[in-house]
Image (cartoon, rainbow, N blue to C red):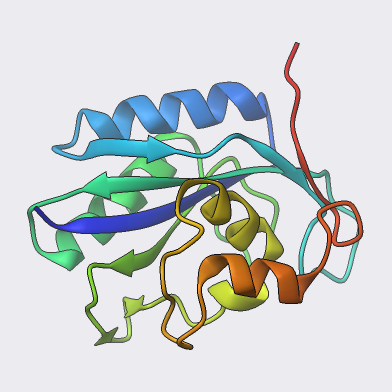
Length: 164
């Protein structure tokens, strides 16, 4: 069993549909989804111009293949949902980031694990804390400790999304 964590985010099109389709396509790609967080609505992060809010979630998965095969699967799902990459902070139909793969460290031009910025991103830490609050991150702090340091959900622009 190889445990990994992925974050999913979308701020273009039918956001809930995008998340559902991404989850379906990931699960058809030899990925076993073990746990998933609630969906959170978040303000765009590190952008210089106005964008729509994101829907974000984190999933815990079992994936028995090579980490680069996992990355390739994530990229294929993004592309299948119409992901465009005009620049790094462009709006997107789907963004899937590999956060952690077991306790592995990978530094490669295509893949860096643990994700180098995840502990600064409320839109990652808040959903991750829902499914794995006691998971110890590379900094040596638990997800719950990092969440507390980042601040209250509403203050940092993260709230559970009620779809109805």
